[in-house]
Length: 607
Ligand code: ATP
Image (cartoon, rainbow, N blue to C red):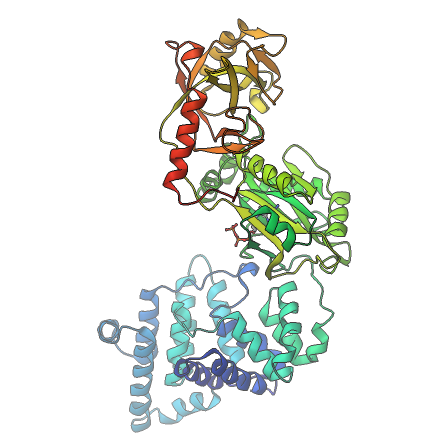
């Protein structure tokens, strides 16, 4: 063994010791001892082994690809016993690691009594090193395709032959993915601070470095080789994911505003998948919230990023959301999930188109932006993003008024967002990677309620579609009937539920009713592309009723300045049998809304 390596037995012994301690503090002490004895050149490997992996997830190392069957075979081969014996012991002990340990002990005592002793001792004395174990396992993972099973088998059996019983136990458990040492990232950070930083006071520095470069092996090696000071100046790097900044949860807009310092940037909280987009020239990588490489799932986003980021090297963040291809409207998270479950990406890309809403910039052309306050980051983000149809800066307002914030929240919900994100704008509003804090506060509704009844609504306007529905009227402005005032008040825009055929029929039907201006019996805050005389009634089912500042239905009935609307409405069928005055009334909608609330214990936000 060269001086730059570590005998694997120290790692195996540490694993065993970790199984005996129960507190995190004790674990950190045990680990720190191991780290101190580990030559810096291999400490990254030790850290990965501890984490039960060979590389950080985002590096996309292949799986080991050694199933239970193959492992049984390898154990049988290594210890020259039958597979059925291994199986039997497995049934009795319930853990292949313990089987390997027992068989290794047996074969050791057999060997020391029998012939072949010298040869056996030779290999035993050489001992396994961390590099040998790690590199062999990496070879196992990278053995792919034809003949790879035999290669994997040979390498694993070879490792077991050379392993002590304790080493064999943990090698097998590692391969099975069953180390279960209970060592989390936080404990490893504690141990690094103890081993190389003189104690827990240096932990924040190491943790910050890890938050900016999410590779614990790399950070450990840097700290071990060059000391804690060397990680102080660490910056994000294109290609290495940054741990995401996270938000606290708020309840009341006024209180949230106070918490973030009076004035805030409020954005839609889009209901999709977080994307950390890295760009280096033409190369684009997308990391998920969990820092997995998800680039392959979003070839369309890659293309948008290539064109829409006007910087050579950048890391920006946004949310990928499913949209309705015909209207550009937001679709719920579940729709995006369809995309993730399918394999034919190119096909599903068309079925589930997405938009990206960008909200932060972490790094741009050599500059680490994490230490800049949000207003500066925003300015830089806006300067490098070239918006297009489905590639946009997140919708936002800047406000210090709780009432305005509340209305923005309702608008966001109604438009299909999950709520809003309220972000501090003060001097210290940094990008705090990996931290959940009060610089960002999310305001979501605490409840979800289903709308079970359909409603019958009157068409009072229409909008032109996009894409293949361009030039055709494809979404309808729908109204309820207010019997007290004998007028029609808008309640939602319906764009889904129509087949292409129905859409053509609808365009024909609408022709007769299009009028040059708003009908005097219609009250609306929205301005559709064409106004329609109230005549046609359609049955609509939505996800739920929600308060809305954008619609005039039941304006002020629940709360001043806001009406009621229907979220994610869907066309069911025409109700030719109904006159507009037979449509669902405002009174009925108020009743439905209240019933919905009664089922829930609290209103969305204190009034
Ligand atoms: P949740 O389950 O509520 O999404 P979370 O734990 O994933 O919570 P939080 O920090 O609580 O994360 O909420 C922020 C999340 O909201 C981000 O991870 C991101 O995916 C999403 N998001 C949507 N729109 C925005 C936005 N405008 N700014 C920041 N995050 C946004």
